[in-house]
Image 1 (cartoon, rainbow, N blue to C red):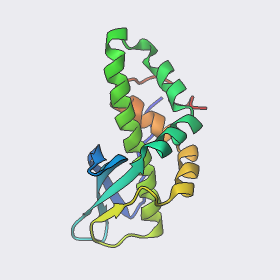
Image 2: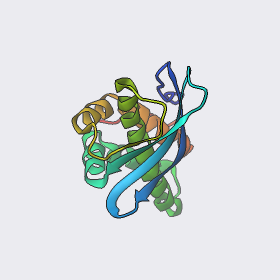
Image 3: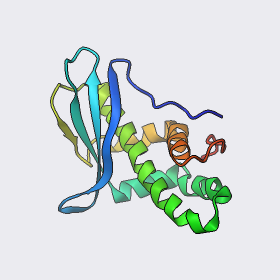
Length: 155
């Protein structure tokens, strides 16, 4: 199965800039920065999307990500699994932050740099991630070169 493409609003072009990385002074918060360019803008902006570790753990459990990852890594040599798991966790954070960024884009964005706080879109994000679990699994699998693993099987 080919990887599910990253959904984009037709008005915006979004690319990952950096992250996830810890937020200074906030030990349980991760930040992922995206470049966002609206089709009508002359230049793009950067949006830092923050998410806290407890919410990530809740989201991960709710979509069955740990189980999916265990199955996906069965074909990876045992000595390499730890590094794959670490990278998969980073990719999971990126994908969840991308979903959160999409919520911001749908609600409207101005042409200036933004920081989307960890407490923004809490309820909405849980719903969106549930609907986009295939995107998350596909993002992780394709970045780890785990394809053609069945990315549709997250609970």
